[in-house]
Length: 155
Image (cartoon, rainbow, N blue to C red; front, top):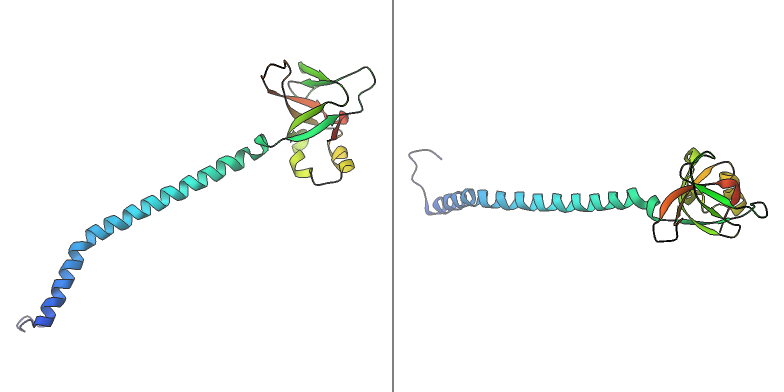
């Protein structure tokens, strides 16, 4: 449109619309930014919740294993660390059901082998120490300890 050309009624309405759109733009931009922040915050909240539960999945799920194969009159010692020289926390006789965290030495995870045949699970932990969640004082004070896999079978 040339500078000398008079503005018609139609173009005035068009200019009015354009001016109004430009005036509304900061409000709409603010609204879009707020929606973006809310969506981002919600997505981060969901992602952090999923990560929190995923990171703890092996710590909160237990596998039940039974003490077996301990010589007559003897017990399976659960120790503070995975070593025969470590402090003894408790002793359990054959038939005792133990709550296993799933963590074993050698990078083995009982929860990952749970679908295999029992003999194969037993074979996998035969020479490993596996972490137990137990209450040695039987007072509600649960702690982790380690039991030698040779004397454990899947329950």
